[in-house]
Length: 116
Length: 437
Image (cartoon, rainbow over all chains, first blue to last red; front, side, top):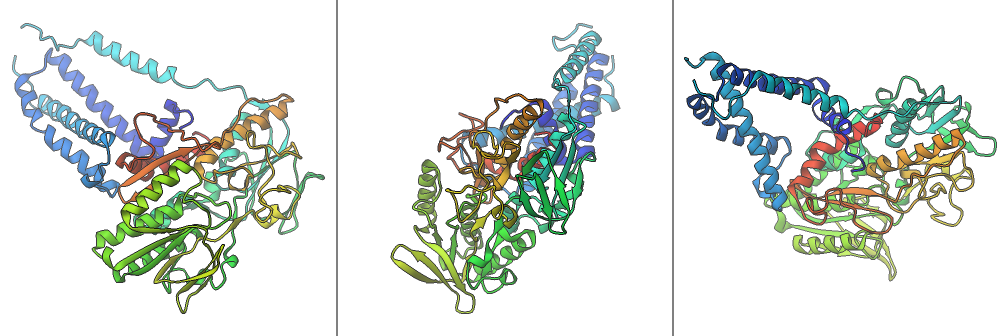
């Protein structure tokens, strides 16, 4: 890679997903993050019970993210060739887990606000 | 109520948002002021190199008259041909419209270049149109010399056990059907590369690996015999990579033959004839993948531009290998496959060559010298099976030049390298076409 600037990276992602899908996903991710931060500020804390329930979705998110990437790239577990592959796989799983947990927490907190 | 340590505040939230915005705004690269000029710049070829150059020039120059000459209406994403020939993508994966990539500020003459007169600074098209230039970028790509393989014709691709994925997206799809039918039935498969310089020297190796992989997945590997025949004395021009491929061929049971140049095929009898130092050798086959010799297009070969003492049967443009500038005609540059430099007829080379040639062109317009140089960087995601590849990158000096040293090992078969080929490569290529990468 010659020069990996933020601009290049954004251009590459726009090409992978298409302009509208990519920026739509960025907007969706930002919206979920903003809503998550909103409920944190509103409740002044992480609600333990809600969080535990949300965390139940983490393994689902992890597996879904990995299966999605395998499906999109015609590959599978047998193709892991070295440590970086396992790190990459764990990273994809972690992203899926954290993403779905935050989404689940936010949805629960919005639908069913904790009683004060 | 007591606040938990994780408690957030509105102030923190606002601070975070402001920080994010600052990061985004602050990272926009400062653009150099556009150079004013009325220069007439003609680009021969609207492929990867020509298109990338046009898109860069319209943003770096103001007032320049930029003309591209290319008769082909379709733009071909050539790195995709291997994926099509492996049955992973449809032919349409590699096809888009040339005009869709070109900047509005540039003019496209949809005719083929027929003659180049560097003394008169004039290009003549096949329809007789004369196009004068102040600067000329030769980015014609190369020509596949199918006639050099006796007995072969393009209409045979996909039939009689013949594959030839270099011929185009439709041919790559037909190659996949022929390869799949062969893997089903079994027999002897022959792969190889030409004796000339070629685009993507990894592609013949990839298709041999992919055929082996396909037969293995189909459960017919024991019925399949695979041979790879190279005109050279090694499997790859970079010795350390050649050794690695030799070892992988050993592991995968692909027999390597050296100093074998494909001369002819007899499609009826399914016999291939190779020239070797010991004379002609014939080999029977059930499937053969033909990759012909490659040369500069006739318009370039018949012009005064090629080297007089190097690659005389191929006609690559005589340029300085560091600056891509013509050694005898300083107002001419050559980028991409047609450039007479060692190695690197790949899209990755184009990505690195174009900004260097552009810098020297702009410096010439401004009457100064540029310092940018190109050191032969090229890259080859060498697919070894569906799901794994080696991210091989190297330069003129046969040195490995990994983009991610210590993270992505160049000589390991990795999934992450496959992901790059599958997901990021076409996107990076498209960004390059738009002049953004």
